[in-house]
Image 1 (cartoon, rainbow, N blue to C red):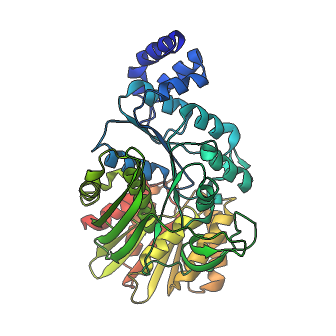
Image 2 (image 1 turned 30 degrees about the horizontal axis):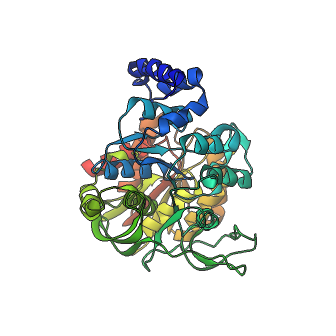
Image 3 (image 1 turned 120 degrees about the vertical axis):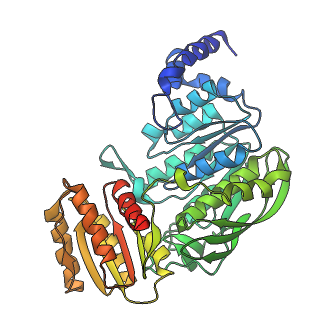
Length: 473
């Protein structure tokens, strides 16, 4: 290490106690000090201190959950340095400075090239692994400005574009992430993950998805979730075969049984490894099946102890502590003779996931208690309305999910044209306790045996409060 870098590293370590006041594990203060003194390019000297190398995780959704799961898995086999929730180069530098370990595991969200500097991150961190969850247009807005999706996509690609060593781990069911692996197949190893089951299917009207290779419309043999599925194009691009796949699943409202099989390249040993595991997990949502596959694929790719793969996966997932998943996640709660599904569904993708989850339990008339978006969120409402109609509810109740009661009533009037007997409760945002109590009351006093309550809310707190009241009763 150069003298300048050594001095910068020593001074950055002094900031350790201060950095602990920050959120998440990023604790970026030390990294800020280091880069101010030594410059951002000096991070490459920190990166070379790792025995195996760095793994960076990115995508539109699932980054934090996948990173957390990967940390849980790899920590059983090897000392690691990690950061999550703080998506900056300084957070990565802080972890490299303040922690000890042979491998780095870093979450890194990117919304555009200017703020995300993905090409710079790739160059100075020089990752041996980049993990892609999924890529969709939901997070394309930056600083109040709509970021063109092609630029957002390019920014994600730049995190791995310069790689000439290591492994890209990517979702083969998502044509956008699969194509990133497809383009790098001659430069690095690609480990794909995906679904190979008949029990998960998307029943929503299909959107047109363009082929990332030629721009023409993709043909889908099957859709699992929105744009994720089995697809092909006349140009020759098609879904790659999964190296790690979900091959069997059984759902109940109390537990899910998953079978996951893998045959993939392991980076530390430079050999292929195979495994098969049967897991029992809480009902944690379809999106978390993909997060589970991504984390297991990354773990099996980078653990130096390949003989531990099956036992470690079983230990982590069969004893899964759900506290790392944010409160407010969608769950189906049994309350006397009712099944009540409730949880956050702030965007169209999340609401669809919740509906797909609930749909497997519905065996009779359904009531939909919908919490609305706010002013200037008409696009979210349009997606939500499609979700409502797809579930074919017998009755709809509308409640403001955000601040504007007037806007909520506008949304209600649109819904009422489709569902004339829909009801509206103008509950105030300022009286959140009253809103929570009323939503709880509506759920337990519903005349229906199946109730879904989702949409926008006071972050996760509102949902968690209602859920706990249902569980404790």
